[in-house]
Amino acid sequence: MIESHGIRSWMSVLENSNFNGLGWAVTSILFYLSIYHFFLYIKNRERFYLFYSVYAFINAVNLLKRVKGVFTEDIYNAWPELFIHANFPIQFASYLVFSFFIMEILNFQKHYPKFKVFFIRYAIIISLIFGVLVAGRYLWDGYEMMRNFYMKIFYPITLLFTLFGIYLVVKIPEKVKYYILTGFLSLGIFTFIFAFLTFGKDVSITNKYFYLFYIPVLLENFLYTFALAIKQREVYDEKISIKKELIDQEEVNEYLRSQLNEKLKEELVRKEEKIYSLEADAKEQRMAKLKADYEKEITLLHLQSLRNQMNPHFIFNALNSIKVYLIENDKENAVTYLNKFAKLIRMVLESSRMFSISLGEELDIARLYISLESIRFEKSIHFDLIVGEDVDLVNSKVPPLILQPFLENAIWHGLMSKRGDKSITLQVLRFGKNLRVSIRDNGVGRKKSEEMMVNKSIKKQSLGIKLNSERLRYFNESEHVEYRFEFIDHTVHSGQEGTEVVLYLDQAAT
Image (cartoon, rainbow, N blue to C red; front, side):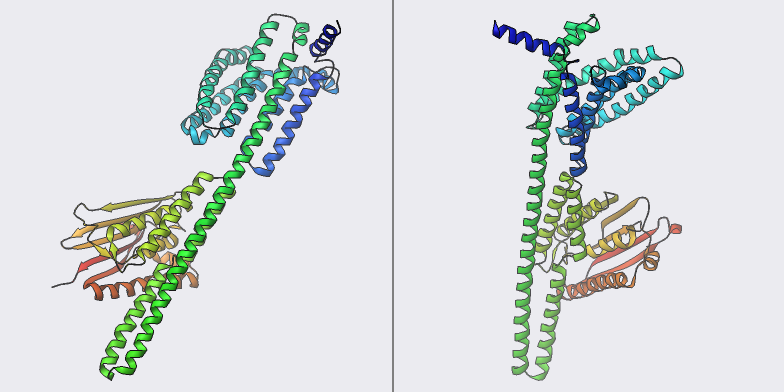
């Protein structure tokens, strides 16, 4: 008897949930969760916090009209028509916000990017239509039209999206999906039972069984809150992992640069010591010739040392770009940029040990360099590489990194100040036994660039071009070729504004 009485007491509490404070407790918890997760969004800038905060708030507002015996009943009684008119819009907003919350916390952008784009477009179109119909309720007495649209069009489409969404969630490889599915299905099952028991009944029956809605709502939101905590931990671990990879890669790059520079310094010391030894032993004429030869080698080593160190400005900007991606939580672009940056550094360090590399390898370095700079310019640089079918990229030799200064000048002195479309075309064609390498941009041109540049930048550009001239001169003497380059200024009158650098890879006349 005591046990039976206890069960009846509990059932009495549940069946009076709208009047005894239980309903108000659930509503208050939803308001608290909404405010709490909104502050988490402000702190962490993770959008799944924002969507969940709005979702919890909408559900709390939707329950206010059911709660009796508290101050919110006075608010409802003061503006009953406002709550009645807001019923369909609130349910409409609840579905869309919940859908975006699911796509955000389960990372649909990574797993189902096409579906996410499609749903965003659908949400915009359906919201515009529903917004017009809501306005029509007051402008031309269009309540029935709005209600029919919601019940006969939006609701069936929503059901199809829900079923397909459950299928996608089941397939997705995310740990938190189990909590999401459990909460969603719990609410769905209890809501169906509640609707079955109260369909066609008066409001007293609805109030009696409304606890069948409060309990799953509370369970659903507790499960979602737990899922959010797990998701935030995963996001934190990913950030730590990416930062660690970045630091490790920086340490490796720094070690390789220091090792290479040490070897170059040792080589310079050996060459200089050999020159001093020859000065003491050789005759004046022979000594002068040998001294000139070794000074030439020392000059080449100095040039190699300069060539082997990537532009510090470029390295700083590249690392800064990775930092920006991490701050903005753009993990995919950060990892992509880091991998390309590491690959470029490795290619540069490997090629720097050689006096010459194949033209194909040089074009690979150029292509990778352009792709990195293009990412930093938000992929606004269009790059075309055109190679003639009769060009031998394997046996054609060039000094390493001979194209990079020209490409850097094209970007920073030609395209950076240009508005609109930005493009660089790199073309390699054969003319008889010789090759022509053309680098053409559609930038502002050299004249306008010089007017905009400060003196320091102009000197930097001139130094890069002078260094390339010196490298080509020594390369020509060593390999018995006639490599040279020239600048061609294009104006609007000539068809397209911009600058073109033509590198002539001519064989020496026999």
